Length: 443
Image (cartoon, rainbow, N blue to C red):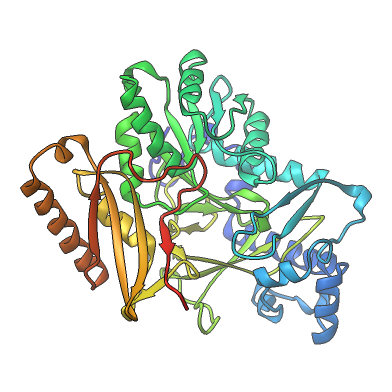
């Protein structure tokens, strides 16, 4: 059953007792766990030293509002504490480690006890179950394994739920499609740029995804994508696409997830304490107002992290969800505060460009934003793949499309970028996260 009134059938819940607590019960649980996590965190070198400096102890926390007594934790704090500075358990209790990519600086390590992994698997099973995935489904995991948390996180969640789980990993597009056909894959986990790439490969192979595949559900995340991209994927494959949010510092995927109402992502407040703050003042913003997401782990044993500044921009959606879950919902991530770039005095998020491009039918599935500096003047160039049909038509049509894209982007961004139209499949592609922004400006 989908969303009806203020409640759904019992079959909708993986863990009904946790998902439908009264909010008073949930806040009492959060307070109990917050006190315990402060005590646990104080065992680490990092938090132990920080708490000693400000005189903070577990008994300093008497209400959830006392979360503000705890200083924020930044990505730089994790880098400075690498590799073991945030550990709260001896190494003989650790059973897993993941490491961030470190693409913007020193990598960060995240450690797990066996209990941490079990809790994480339960959270992912909870997420997948509320979208309609059930034992009997075949789940194909088309994301990277290894140090990346997304692959193993979903893998163990799917097995906990009882799905036939295929660890196909990333890449090898034609092989992925063949596996989908051979084993009647019904549920997939995939990053949005790879889902778009597979659309082109499926078309080239002459496959009708609605007729020749058995897909019904896709879990999509790991990189920002717009609602327009979601619609493209849903329309092409004939499936429901559910937005997934997570980050390695908080376990990995499974922090927040859409239910079948697709009206925001339920953030599991029995495992994480959520705040949204103004990224400049670090003061809390009202519900419904966009700001930076700040998260505190409430159940982690090996490596609790308190008031972590995610840099992700979102808002808490006011009101309750008709699915019956009490956990607050966050809106889809608008982007990262550190993804924003400034061009000609204008603040721009790459996802704003995607929202415009994916609403234009003649535009293909790939694009890249180039930032250049010529004679001390900044220039923004958007290279856009167009569909086969429009590319083979006359130059006049291409010029019209070029002007249309420039006009639409000016309306969104308040500046006019240079538009370069290119033929299908001519821009660089990757089976991993897409590179949408290339900044070639020199400082």
